[in-house]
Length: 515
Ligand SMILES: Cc1cc2nc3c(=O)[nH]c(=O)nc-3n(C[C@H](O)[C@H](O)[C@H](O)COP(=O)(O)OP(=O)(O)OC[C@H]3O[C@@H](n4cnc5c(N)ncnc54)[C@H](O)[C@@H]3O)c2cc1C
Ligand SMILES: CC(C)=CCC/C(C)=C/CC/C(C)=C/CSC[C@H](N)C(=O)O
Image 1 (cartoon, rainbow, N blue to C red):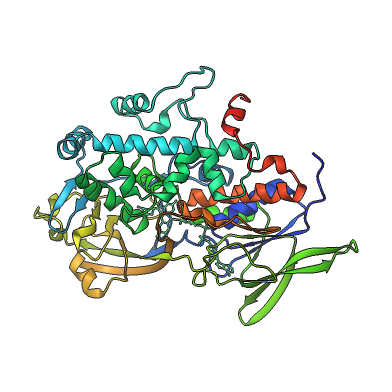
Image 2: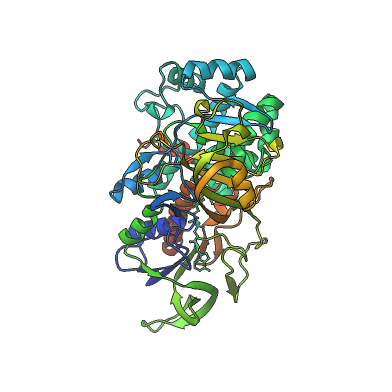
């Protein structure tokens, strides 16, 4: 198809993983001559950030990446960064009185403990998550060259029996990535999800995880003791979240989670540099559509982006604008002038979560009557009714450590605590026998999930795109990267009038025969 001359200037608002990966993909699509300005009012990285504890950096926001998150994997490779293992250590679940589950070092003991307490529900839960992830991120069970499908339970049993993780399977052909690598774009989050998983996926946005798993026959005990604590640590809510984000959250219990050596935010600064974008350290206040006469002499509709650097107000004109930050008053406070973007809810409520890092000796007697040297757990999750003031507590390695932290000689470790509210000194003193240092960071972390979810539009206006609507399905680094790639493709196709590359039906079948 014939291409129109590329745009002169593109603005991206927000230099988190969404904005910086959008810059990277826009550069790939529109070429080297387009000027890309990236506005950031705080730090490059956004919700990927570190905190210092006694000279070492620790992840304070987005910390773990799933092995099937291929955009993140690709960025790390292209930018010459390294991955480190992110999961490890033994997990316990505390219900306010006792540890209802304690992981053991022995795989077989864990299987016996789980089967004893919950029957085969844990295995069935893994299968359910795998099914969702396979639809989302892979061409399910299809082995190249064989035209042969393997049912989920076979591969699952197979990997359990052989001690393999599912990413060792031979049959992964990526699905969302395949659509995107063939340049297909979607004009709404719903259409994107529908293309991946049909009506099932859309249904998952409208039902709670609780309803979904109850219907699938999971017991109250399993939901309260195993599922709710995972939702609390990951999304600061319980099983009342939508079933899609529930599945994403449960995928954190897969093996092979990883992080970027030196800090996940290095991906953002790397993408910013690789995309040769211009960082403007300012806060965007208004976006207004105006008609401007370009150097060609033609009157052209453009967006004027008005921003503030310190006390100074400046502005510039752009052909295309991408908004890569949640649009609400507390998080971005951007006003649109001369047009009404189709977003009903500008006050979408984001969950308040506090990350606290404490270097100290845990008061293990809160959780267990065992002697302190026999405690052995690295992470404790809590149930909804635990009445404890924390969602979770766990030992964390610094961003430079390649393995789990070495056993400490003095009993002190760096612990990461997630809580709904800022911890008081008295609460920290209850959790720790003694501590050397504590540092905290409050977040508006991710949407407060309340199905049925209606995702905000991606197209806010003619050439104005919004990335963070995808968070209503699930908030994660990879979700922002997927939204960024999609928005870059959408902007490119709409600029060039390639309507056949947008919202195509039947891509699964079409691309299957194209291999
Ligand atoms: C505590 C916590 C733990 C998490 N853990 C994980 C995890 O383990 N794994 C995972 O995958 N995800 C995790 N997440 C979610 C993940 O971090 C986010 O989904 C992701 O980082 C969002 O990236 P983003 O670029 O879309 O938004 P953001 O990172 O929020 O970026 C938006 C940027 O826009 C800037 N901005 C806002 N308004 C303006 C304005 N008016 N002008 C200029 N700049 C503006 C902001 O300063 C910000 O830097 C976690 C999040 C939190 C908070
Ligand atoms: C997008 C898909 C399919 C998978 C991503 C799975 C993933 C890594 C989700 C992360 C969810 C999240 C918001 C976790 C927050 S807490 C993470 C961790 N437990 C910590 O201690 O920081």
